[in-house]
Image (cartoon, rainbow, N blue to C red; front, side, top):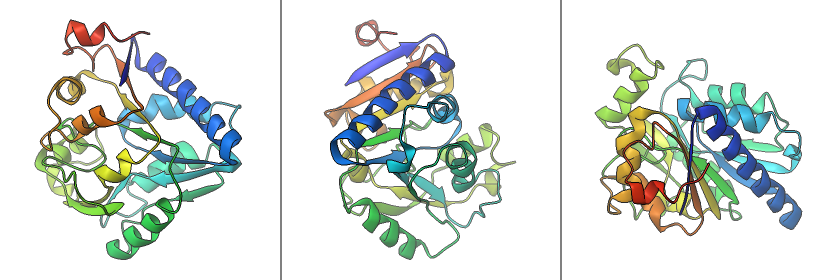
Length: 252
């Protein structure tokens, strides 16, 4: 586990994009393509801006998979993750193939179809975040650490749904969908390399629990401690509650 702490979200995003670009280039050089997983949400703004601005990635050799999506939410909605990805990633770089989760279609059919494509070959790198409640993708606490399906239909807890309201995606709690499609914890862990990108003070308690607490379904992101190649990109605010012994390992 590597930890990097930066003085600003901008620097954090640029550094994460540097490492992501290297990993994508290495995968293309070794295997002719890079298979990647991407997160959405406000925490990924700076990272995606920096990544899509790069000119040293052969995006036509990249195959992209989507972490999660609300059930029943139209793509026209401002909170749609499909809309987010089209606006912030797919419209900016010529990705060779993208597998987006259609939250308006039959969820069982979607998770089977995209799951089959996802598991057809190893994934090179995943870009993830951590929720205010410690969730990983939409695996809210207590997360299922044993599910083997690549995608699950999950019920969102109130803390997760309230975060979406707080970030301005929905006008109130009642407007947030109750269920979503989410990549499973075990599927995320099957990735060769994971970059976990987490800015903002509101994530500080979850970051501390995920990095310094026990590995537990009550803090789903704590499972990242078990991955052999995970790097955390934090800003000063999200790292504020980490102990001196943890932050001593971090370098900007």
